[in-house]
Image 1: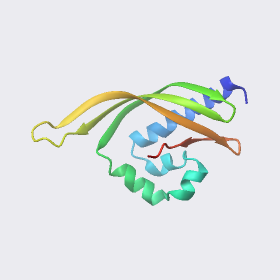
Image 2: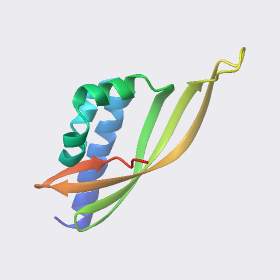
Image 3: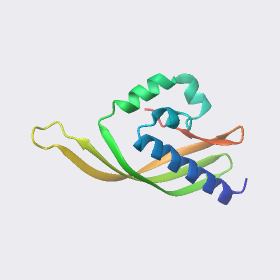
Image 4: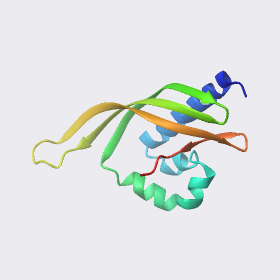
Length: 116
């Protein structure tokens, strides 16, 4: 697959994955993870972890994918909010750019979470 074609496919899959997370469809988002990651982390564990995060993802826009061979590096512009622990502060919103790595496995692109 040409790099331009790979970039398009990966950007579409990354956008779909983020929409699933925003919509709290964590089982759907789980399907975008690499098969190797899914061997290590079960669906129930993943869904529990994602559902208990204090952050609320509000909007994601995949802005770029640079692909070389079987690896694509993706940039996602993310708007989010979180509840601050200080009394009276409430929810605070912000934005960030997230860097993701996607790998092709058996002809399909999957997200490889950065652990650590």
